[in-house]
Amino acid sequence: MLKNNFKRGQVDTTLFKKTLEKDILIVQIYVDDIIFGSTNASLCKEFSNLMQEEFEMSMMGELKFFVGIQINQCKYTKELLKKFKLEDCKQMNTPMHPTCTLSKENQGSKVDQKLYRGMIGSLLYLTTSRPDILFSVCLCARFQSDPRETHLTAVKRIFGYLKGTTNLGLLYKKPSDYKLVGLCDADYAGDRIERKSTSGNCQFLGDNLISWASKRQATIALSTVEAEYISAASCCTQLLWMKHQLED
Image (cartoon, rainbow, N blue to C red):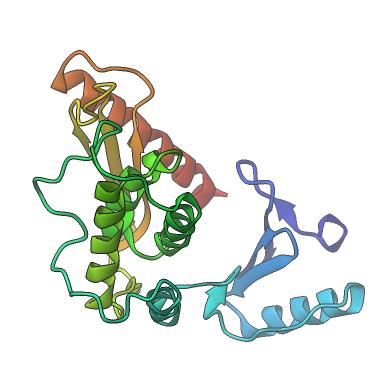
């Protein structure tokens, strides 16, 4: 890439940019997968030919999915329901009941750990395009070492929610304003065992949601204000990384 006059990103070293007069070509590399785009179609064709001359590579055409992930994972969602034999489960309006509280102290019989972990792993893959289930899936993922009936019931509810929302996906449109905005919140002492809080944040470029996270905080916050500050710091860290990436 460097031999062909590409400049490497300062923040993300797998990002490359080439400028030709008023046009730019941007290339993002992930192991042996490449996304590239340009303001000039001829630059895309030129880059494609360059790659195919150097390596055994296939052009997949216009971007519909990347590393197996689609912006709308409808097909994958339906396959999950079929895989875990939940096609006939009851549809739910939310991925988790508002009053639901899960903990390691939950009573109930033990469930198949392999099945539980398989369900969680499949759902985590789905969260790459479904931020609406991220908190619920991450909460249920904490109990993979010793899953109980109450935990499995919570996971099945997520599947019930997915059954009625298989066509949901992310919508990306050309924004009128490219302002980078971040939103964050914290669930103070939501963990009943360790009394740790959960940070939640999301980032928008214009009207488009481009990043999101839900994570239990590493330390115990002594107040709601402290929990909010920790969440805000995490959100700002992501925003600063994105700002530098966009500048590159």
